[in-house]
Amino acid sequence: DAKTTQPPSMDCAEGRAANLPCNHSTISGNEYVYWYRQIHSQGPQYIIHGLKNNETNEMASLIITEDRKSSTLILPHATLRDTAVYYCIVRSPLRGGGSNYKLTFGKGTLLTVNP
Amino acid sequence: NAGVMQNPRHLVRRRGQEARLRCSPMKGHSHVYWYRQLPEEGLKFMVYLQKENIIDESGMPKERFSAEFPKEGPSILRIQQVVRGDSAAYFCASSLIRDRGFGQVDEQFFGPGTRLTVL
Image (cartoon, rainbow over all chains, first blue to last red; front, side, top):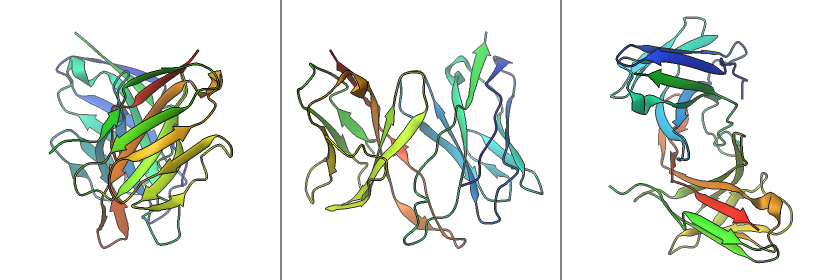
């Protein structure tokens, strides 16, 4: 799976949009971009994933650049409860005999939402 | 729809004792994964199981660790003769696998974890 690069930390004001960047310059054509977050002392929480089109769900939006070498996770109205470590993970689709089901967690970005 | 359940949430063992960690996947999920998170580190994959089968245990230490996912009941991660270095948070995840046309994808849903402390 392609490696990802994320800033170690970011701050955001409550109520503002939080934009978390991720670089994955070695991503392959069939690899997905996943985002998870881990609130302190809790299990990781799935947020969103995409292949090449922008995606939106009730939690966030995922913007993937046209060349797919980077992406941005957008929390449109950050709240204090969004303070967490956010992980960007690139994975190949699952195929028989492959090991792409593994999630490889890097260090992520610690997002701190301030009042 | 109940999420992934893990118990106990906290477990204290003395060196040399056994630790048994349990994971009940989400309803309808037949794929279970175990990850370990050492203090101040990211999660590391340990093992992937389907009902009655170990698919990949490449992340498991070669000795003292074992995992199972029986036909009935929860998945069990078992650590024999625990040592202080086993102190960590152990997370279980479960998933469905769905074909999206570009290949199969899954969303792994994590439990709250079991925090093992070895004295």
